[in-house]
Image (tube, rainbow, N blue to C red; front, side, top):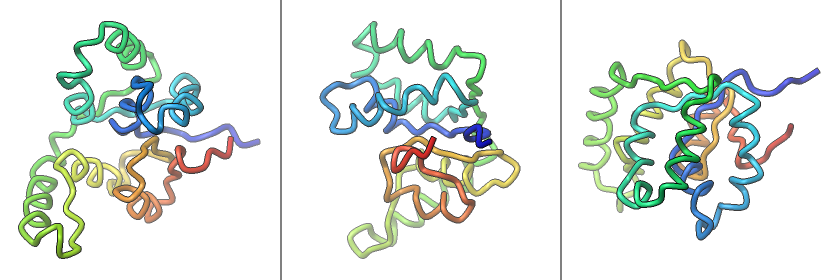
Length: 153
């Protein structure tokens, strides 16, 4: 019997959609929200930095809801220090090549997530994100399911 993913990596795009009713993916995020309670989740520190931005902190209800997720016993905050330098170098190298020339420049936060996703020592079997273009290829290389694309359980 399939019990679901062993551990889910959660991206800031999911949190933004979950807490912003005006977000185009809000309804999709609401449908996936139960996974935050059912399965162990990983939230890397850069996701906290990106999510808890100026707009986010202006809403006490949003902060309370987010804090409830982060304080759950099944939530692990992942230290990103071992990935930072490589991600920084990768981000700058891609940006210098030029996004408009098709090199696919990505943000530093996304570069850190790529490094985490590549690390076979971090047990991840699924990812909650709405930034499909940035993560589907790297997830596919490790057989990591992108849950917000097609939830099968």
